[in-house]
Length: 195
Image (cartoon, rainbow, N blue to C red; front, side):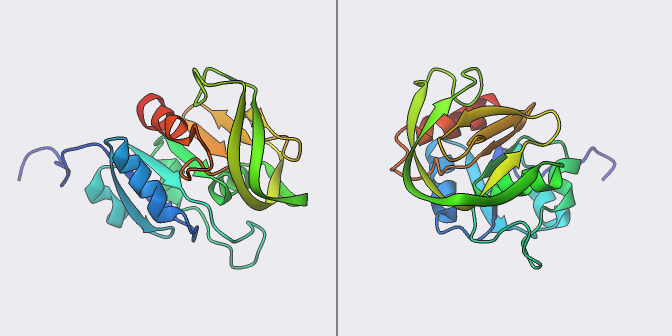
């Protein structure tokens, strides 16, 4: 009473919003392996539910939906209102693109399985990594136009925007949490410790 607001947690926490990916639990595990506490919450968690965690950042998982489906999972308003660092993975990237004024469309060719990305901007989540990286893809939609102010960080033959970034918001079309993305841990750590 009479003092400043004190969060219920006193350590850095990253909230992972679950959009139905088969890998959501694995994202949480990888974040914890990087020595950052995380909690996996439903995508529609309210700020009242999240505030007690005093999050330092948010990760949006992948999921099976398309952002244009009538009942597609949405982005809670607090994610952008709180100006927290955000990492959107697969559907999470498409959702950020859709909400922030970019364009998402059906890919001519569904990308499922191994792919190679070409890094276009080294000084981001790809700092110190090779210019070409093997990754694991699993998506039927792709980014057709970036939201205003974003730049392409990586591309594949089928996805002109395999990764994008603006300030402290990053989107990646691939899954860094799986073992099929050899440098995935380094990419997650770059988000957790540098973004």
